[in-house]
Length: 119
Length: 114
Image 1 (cartoon, each protein chain N blue to C red):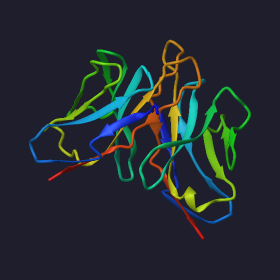
Image 2 (tube, each protein chain N blue to C red):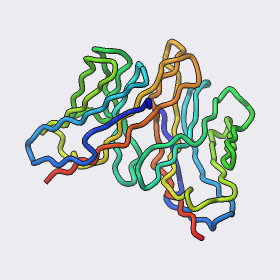
Image 3 (cartoon, each protein chain N blue to C red):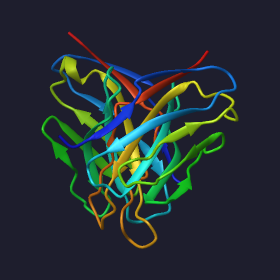
Image 4 (cartoon, rainbow over the protein chains, first blue to last red):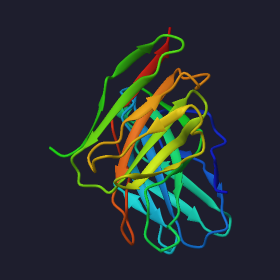
């Protein structure tokens, strides 16, 4: 079974500062995908960033970057130059390919980290 | 615009009643999913479907039922057998591809038992 653990229920950061959210996962799979989703107060789930396990290079999307440590099964999210609009619940999620090698969007989620950005 | 539409946004149910949550997508995605979100629990998978007329139980299927008669639609029925149905329900869809798939989510339905 796949499990995803987010050990920080809440975090806060001042505007323009940098914050790192932690995520660890447990799997016996070698090929898989990892995601960070953002859920603002509107409750719409928004994809922030994606990482393929077979890629050694860490994914980046503008102010968002990840530190993917496959051996340690760690997948942290770094938010640089934090903005008030980054205030949201952040979920780490895991996806594995099907037995036939195709990917199915079935996600395993952590319990989330509530991030508050204050002025 | 392509996307996933869930309705209603808020739903109230009396004890002992069945209710059906609607989920429609126009993204031409093969796979659709229902997740339940409770405070402090993250999202848990209820049911998913990879193809029309076929679906599989997720981690918390008891007390729920689904159908997939059309590719675009994946309604969820919360039955009276579900002991604690008050929650936020999210529908999602995705392609089935060899790599780089992504799940797209609807805006959710908040179900409250009164």
